[in-house]
Image (tube, rainbow, N blue to C red; front, side):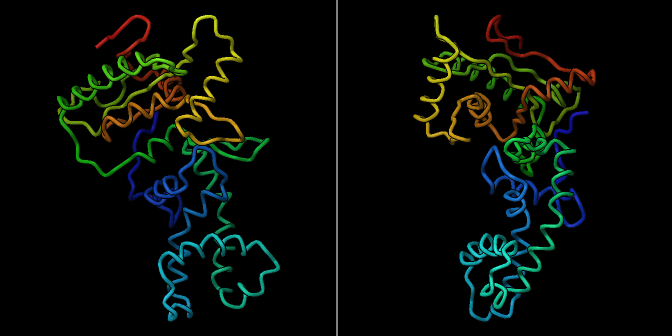
Length: 278
């Protein structure tokens, strides 16, 4: 069963709510990240609270200074040659060391729920899984009517048509599948669950090498982030559609595979080659 939504009040692990995980993913603001980097943001509220309660808090440590200290103290907790930090912030360093002991368990729990993918052996970094992207976008929204959900679905399909008509695209919206509550008879829904499949948009007689070069040049022009020296527009179609409404929950091809394996109901609502199926 594909887990589409999380109860933000529930805990991933004792003391770590899904709301905290969501906020940490948003704060990290990247598609590729290390477990250590994610946990800096995940445990930042605990470290900030400890800074506020520290005896030196009488010196009026500002909020912004606390934020800067969090990263410095996190790094210093692994450094055996930090006498100045040990003298002034020894209790905070001890807290950071205790929190770092939780990283393996936190990482495994996130992987088990597909919030992050297993780390690549070469680089030791994780990507957000489909559940992680859904969690990052999740808000405490009121339920909407089935009719409003149908209107949003139509907007998505027509937006896909318009998107694909743009010139010089490197990735187009190939297929869109609907699943979840809008396919049921419920009168209200939490969101519109979609799988969006992107495909390379080759120009006539364009080689793979030329395509990759054009994709990287377009990504650079758009100011997209670079990962290990490479840029790509591969996620732009999904990001384009997600901007339509916070009531859209957009997943990728991995979710489609899971849905099919579990024999869950899905419906193709758009195909760039053969047309619209609404």
